[in-house]
Length: 163
Image 1 (cartoon, rainbow, N blue to C red):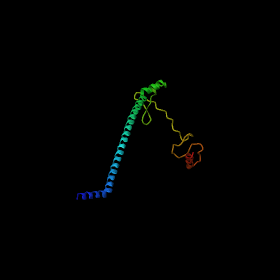
Image 2 (spheres, helix red, strand yellow):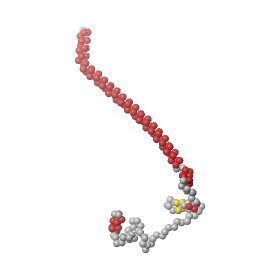
Image 3 (cartoon, one colour):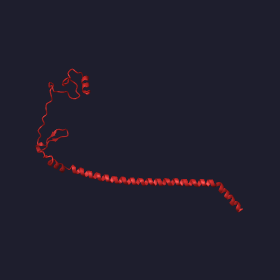
Image 4 (cartoon, helix red, strand yellow):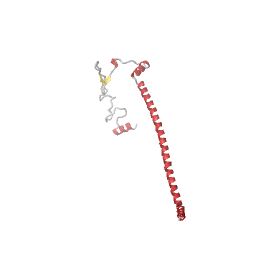
């Protein structure tokens, strides 16, 4: 009877051999695919780490360059250096107290506390009979420009914008 059982087991094995081979091949392919993706992922991670190191080195180098440029700008814009260049190379001298004028935020001359300021002379506006008088920008009316006599407003606009 043992021979019969073993003979039957061999027959079942031979009958299922195709399924077992297919199952084993599927497991080998699945493990191979997983192994391939693990190696690919690890390789990409190493490449990214190398790129990060290179970018950090470049960042450090650029920060050093920036610090050097800031130091150079501070040296070039130092008031003592500018005064020395103005005095030695350009022959400039500091202004006297009479030559200093202070301006307000509106552009008007403001007197310092220790001395008064002479008012700046302003020419009077031209009168209506003055031949050099011109209308203010945007004001329509008679024009004092030579050759504008007898032109309508539309013709003056055309002449003004189509030059």
